[in-house]
Image (cartoon, helix red, strand yellow):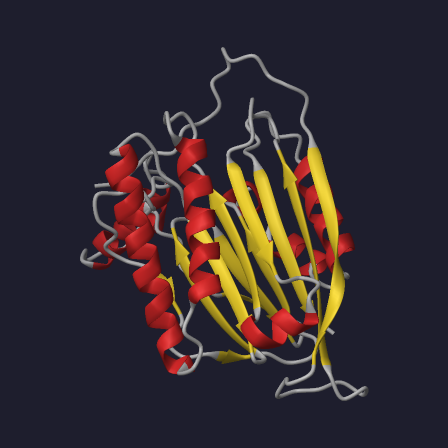
Length: 290
């Protein structure tokens, strides 16, 4: 079972596209495994959100512990982006409930045994899904990507087609797999004698979600089972498909060479430069290790 994402309805009254950019204070972690010349590792973060050509904003995001050094040392940094499914009745409530659920998990996470953090994140995601399903039935859904930076290590989780990128040493790496029907179509092609990617890529339902929060049961989540060490120069991007589906990875990579606030502005400029009449809501969070 999959969900076909709604495209813009040309009969709807459009509102003027808006965006908000926020630069967050740099903060310093004094117990990092990798340190800069001052003996400490620092992070900078910024978030941006725009409506695009849609009537309303259906993305939500959160950044937790961006300025409190003590809390960063104690609990780490959390970033979450949720892309609500357009056109479904309770989309706004569901995406906000998902963000709030992950923030609550972050506050209560057991960090004593770090190897158990990935399991806690996946279990939280399943519990959020069950709660949302109980409260809203099939009236909506949302994608979700989150990263937790704790003790100079990265934990991440993803459901749906929002993405997490890591740029390290000049290379851009997409950390998670998109849960879309196209992947199933590729697998079908692999079972044939003559593989034709074009047939899969021409399917009208190729972008339909196969996993999302709000589904009767989440069959697959992407997450790292072991912590990923972070180092100076690493840059992390979380974004909804309003960014990743409308601009190229080359444009994303170039933006991630900039400081977070400028990176967000560059990503928005790249999105707007396409002048796409069906431009989706777009949301991004950029985190730099400096």
